[in-house]
Image 1 (cartoon, rainbow, N blue to C red):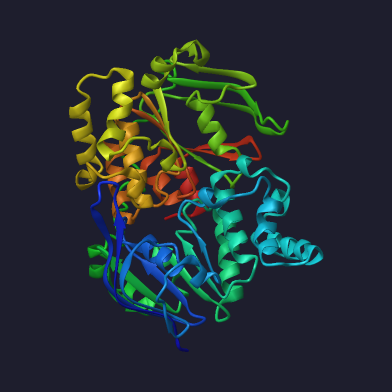
Image 2: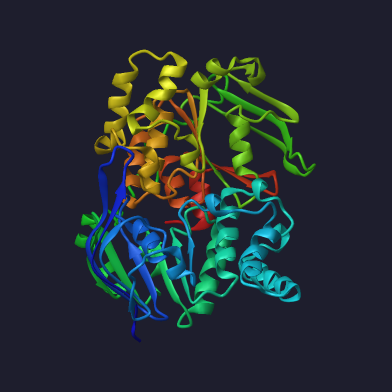
Length: 486
């Protein structure tokens, strides 16, 4: 093998609107070899995504020497790396076409494939990634997990020699993760594959791993050897050994026999504009202080259910009562004081010019007293004080998510819906979120996710959704036994 990429003393800067440069990579040295599978791991904000963009020809100004295919890049641009495919951390931002079929067809059309060959390639990719039934689905109707898989298939379909996956498994369920792993097995040793992750132990089959911290490479070697170095992983926020909440304790139990539920769903159904059923005959109660997990396959209706619980969507059938009143009876501001939701893609909720401004926005809109004190408390609670005056759009995926969560918690609602809250978070940040939720014993939480170990750490109860219907509603202990999580 010979180096396909060579970076020598590379530093990368992002220019802010006020003219100040932000250092994303600092004096970085790294060789990436042809046809190897390389993991790049590190905590939130360490520069992983910046490195991915640099290698794909999408970065801003950098200094140092960057060599690709044996030639130094003198006039840096995307055209220098047009055979490098990249799936970004926020895949919904790279979906361009109106249907999945068109999205998969687009990269092939751009490369001059014949129509008869395009159809064959699309069917092959759809089978490999398990998205056959989505081919004629509108892309704006996809769930977060489905968006991630479609973006991955679109990046892979033109058979690029180099492919970079930036946190590809943030929104995956078991089936999607299996499809991704099958794809990696099928191309191993045939392509150069770079996988950026915050959970490297799930990718131990890679050839090498590089660990980053504060814009620098701090270790490179065989994954098994680096993963055995627990001290190094702790220093880089990549190791999680806090399982104290897995077996229970701490969460407030449902009080079904003592008082009225905070939220009650009865026979709830929801139909998409296309006429397809998203949810049908959903019914359950949530009580003050309950911590309830919602699980199910990608596209099963979990996010739709969350949007109904938060009052963003209105049911087409059945009833939703909030504090024994129809949810439709609440004025918008009153409803937000009662229930709110953190979206699956946090950047959709970031609208201000600073992190502090985003946290302040909700409390100010709702007229909550002492919004500045609340903002200070949220910055400390989510350990993002150093991001106080940063532009949210400049943050890493994990930092964006923490900022969005801080803004939601600042509203002090009685019921909080969290959609895939651990996606893009490093293990240390996940531990912090566990503690934040545990510190809210009177707040009810509905937590949608594929991170089953996180769910059983924070929830007392797990509800399963499959094909738009209620599949089960069990205690977390029954759920743990069913899935043999511990």
